[in-house]
Each structure stands twice: as C-alpha cells, then as structure tokens.
Image 1 (cartoon, rainbow, N blue to C red):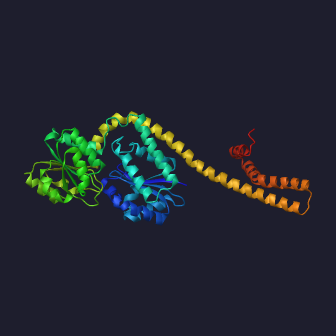
Image 2: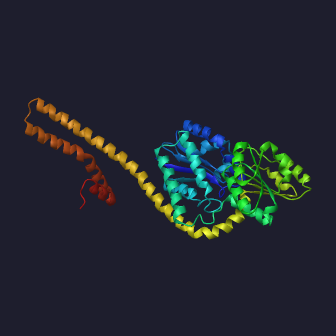
Image 3: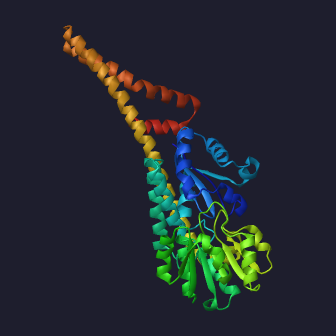
Length: 416
C-alpha cells in the first residue's frame, strides 16, 4: 500500500489557478464517488481557500493516474497545472498531513482553523465511504499530533489566521474601527473568527449576509449583528465601510457594477474589501475602481510575515514532533506488511505440515512400521521446510550480499 498526497497551495500557485482546482462542498461527494469508480482508491479531499489536496491510499493505482484523473475531472490545462502540483509519498505524505493539521504549512504559521477544516473533510470522505482502515488511522494520528503540537509548544500563542490578518489590515487603514460599519459575507468558521476579531477591536456595527438566513442569525446573535440575505447586498453595500467575504460560492457574489453603484451612493467615500474566498467572492475588476481597495488572500502575505517571526522557535519544536510521529506511524504501516507475510508464511507451513501428516496416516493405514513412518515424515518435512531458506542462503552467499545473509541467519534462529 502507498500513501500519496497530491496538492496545490498558496506556495505553489496563485489564487487564480487555485480557484480552478478547488472543490466546493457540493462537489466533494460527487468527486469522491467518481474517483472511487474510475480509480478504485481511498481518498480524502481537503479544499480550502489556500489549498486543495488529495490524500490517497493508492493500492494498485499510480500517482500519475490520480494526477490525470484530477486534470480530467476539473477540466484543467495540463501545462498550466502540472508545474504547480506537489506530490508526496509514504513518510513524506504522513509528515505533510501532520504539518498541515498542526498549522505549520498555513499561510499564517500556526493558524488553528485548518485543523477543523481537515476534520470536516475527513468526516465527509468517511461518510462517502472513501476512507478505509489505513486512511482512518492516518488521519486520526494526524489529529493527535496536531493536538500535541498545540499542547507542547507555543505555536498557538497569540493565535492568528487569515481572518486575523484581514482585520489587522483593516485596522491599518482605519485607525479607529469602532466608527466603521462592516459587512460580512458568509457565516462559516472564517467569518465567525473575523467577527470575533472585529468585536475585539471595538467594531459595533456589523451586518452578516448569507444564503441561509438561519445560519447567519446564529452568528449575528452572538455579536449583535444585523442579518440580510445575499440578494439584499446591493441595497446595503453603500452603508458598508469594510466588506469581508468568505463563502463557498462557485461564482462571484459582489461584482464591479454593484460596487461602483455603492461608491456613487457613498459620494465616493473609500470602501475597503477583503476577499478571503477561493473561488473569489468579489470580482477581480473591483480593484480597478478608484475608491475601492480590494485585497485577496494573496495580499495578506505581508502581515503573515510579521507573525511568522514570533513563531519560528515553536515551529522548530513542532517539526521535531512531526518527524518523530511520522516515523512512528510508518513503523506501524510497515508492520502491516509483516503481518501479511507472517500470515502467508504460516499458511504455507501448515499446508506442508498437513500434506506430511496425511501421507504419514496413509502409510500407517497400509500397515507400514510406525517408527519408519515417523522417521520418514520427519526427514521429508524438514527438507521441505528448509528448502526455500537454503536456496535464499546460497543465493545471498554467491552474490556476496552479507547483510542479507545475516538477516536470513537471524530469521532462522542462527544468531551467532
């Protein structure tokens, strides 16, 4: 069995390409079903604003098969996407998932939201029937390692995230956020975190727009926000000084024309917009408007760098945990192969034994001397059982493979 990670993230590709590869929540089940039918592999799909990754137990399938499946399924340009894809196998794959779950591979080092996103992706894949025992153990170990990293290091001190970076950027543009009215588009974990950071910074005029009003209301009640539907955004956009959007919509929700109209109503007072979603919630062309200041997840890199410095020592400790735990997991994975070998060896030996017993019983039934039967059976059984090891010893000796010869000697009990 081979564990494989195939992915694309904020380090390997720009947001424009990442949004082409991304899977919306509605697409995941269908994709898992299609991959299961076409490839016959176990798979977990993790797709966030910063990464899309396929975690697979390949079985008889090659990594190239999975790459071609992804390109075909998403209708991607092969020449555009191939240079941006990364592939990890076995221990590298194990360590990668542990690093991602621990926030070591995030846009903002140590951000905790990715663990929840991976858990959600794992749950969806398991419910879809695409997670076997190996992937089950793989992800559970990664979750355990992420918890250990949070407990044993300071990686989570002064927790930051893309949401925190967005609010930090807003604070740099508006000295006093308490005077600003903020429109939040979406009601997921990221927007919930944005709302928390905004309230912590003194914002008291919040509006939440979401496709599902009930979900938005749950969020709004916690932070004293007003609730509107997505269709009502054009009627309220002009009231908003700050717009922060993070939904799973496959198409932009806020267009250039909508923002242009809102700016006219605002008498061209500036509007600050942050699009955290992949695919984009806000049309790229909005950034062309004179009084609209649009930032995407890629634009947050400067703030990210400020936070990385304070977490490097903790990250080094976390990397040691990941290395140790990934080696331990690979030991367990390799042990599965030894279990199979032991089972096959035992079955083979029992077949040889049973054949010898049947032959001995037949000889006894024909009246042959029991002592002679016992001696012949022991001689024949010994020859059959030592035949294969003897051949392996001879071949290792002829080829000069002394290390292999030492292993065989130990395996058959000749330790000296």
